[in-house]
Image (cartoon, rainbow, N blue to C red; front, side, top):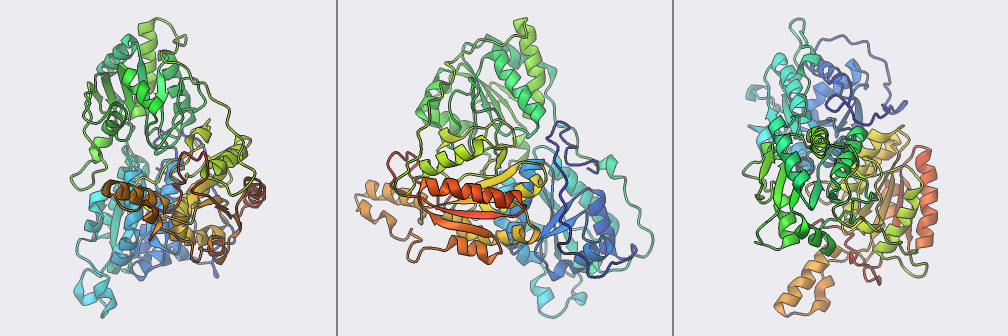
Length: 615
């Protein structure tokens, strides 16, 4: 891991290493030597090449905190101070979405861990590598201070999150702690990736070292190479796809590597296969490519369903909820007549507590491998069987992208109008979208690069959007890419104080709030209940609105030290605000725009599902 964020994925996009000179600078330079157990833990963090550690300070790891400051000098890792533990983990998830490597997080005892649990679940469902350090104790009751040490000490603290982490430990010596830290990083960064947790005893942290510390050679404990498919599996898959009349590829959870992105294009073109992608996962294929016949969506469209019914061979590359895809496109309980190839490592994470493994799909050829490791040998095998490296003729009608309408210039924007303005803005810029509000009109997206869109939060936890975007922007700082997100007003209202961290460290991110002043997704659910039960549909807004008084969302941002403007109501106002916001972000500061959205806007087929609930 010491060689950088691309260790596990040599083809990954290279990003600059950002630093924040002058922020949280030492008042007095320390010349401390390695003398305390927590110094050894801090040194291990540095050797693991963990560049940042997001945290909300807490007494349970005061020893480690001192070592980060006075032994390491708050550098490698640099502390990313947050106002809430949930934001600390969510920032690390946003960072991992870009880099595909762990960022460190420190959580204060049981209470800090309980604060963070929603974000940990998001990271688990999003398969994001995160290395979390917690603390407890002292384990020896004789060492505990009255009251506070007792309520902040738990037996088996990792049990709080064991159902949605890859691994946890509570080591009891310096040597065991260093090994646990290495193992946690190794496991977190190994596919399928996910969060890990190491709980430190406070008394151990604060103990003096009784002799020299022997640090392990970190280079000998790196994550393993991604799992590759067997030659037999590659050959079987190639024959099935070459013999298919209507091959279809479901591009699911794939890497951020530009080389892998190009390899996926070559595979699709070698088969002439139709390609589908999903808005729940990050950009995996160019959406304007002729073989990408339909826009990516949160849920399948009628056109997608028709194509799925035609397909005679389906190649699933770690597609999220494959059985659900068949149920939604073919019809519930309808037999799947196509041959199915499913390449994924995800089942190695499945357990009996979380249902994020989804339904069990019918599969004719199951390949337990990293999906990007299958793509290149499969392309070679397809070309060998076809006896040509030429592109195959498309097996489905190629995409005919209709011209998009202009946004309405009169009256309050609908979500579609907002999306059209955002598309116009992003088309001429190198932008990474850290997220979109639920119900985003996906016919307005155009992904040309694996970092154009880094995907959904994973677990549907409201409040994650702002912190995820900050983490994404942190990873992209000095890369030349503009970090941007569109969040719902409910998401921002719950998570907006994460922006203090962006203001404090001047992390440049452009945040647009799609503000309809209501938890509209739940309005749709109440409408459904009213129709089913024969009750007044007019009551669907009761208990849903955030409009009396309206929440001053930009005021929340300004309270954290972030510049912003709004509420804006027209497309023209938003277009101008984006230019002003871009200028601020290019100067290295965050900016927030409150864009009002009319839930009843004509032609808005997504019905304004922009605020709050993510289900």
